[in-house]
Length: 94
Image: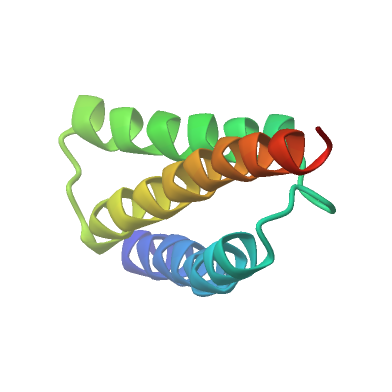
């Protein structure tokens, strides 16, 4: 039963992870913050960091653990792009 729980957690993280490259691409190419919530992005990043810390504390570095890392990196990239796009928008409004 523990294997099934770990497998389902891994599939959840992979499922979420599939969407981040698309979000990053949209942020990069649109150069706009329209439709983005930086608060939402920070909440997601904090959730991933909590997942990583949980795995480290429990010393359960299973497959799911290794998918948390690229996810938090991708969300962080989207956060950086949010602030880049905010600067671009501010310059274009002047």
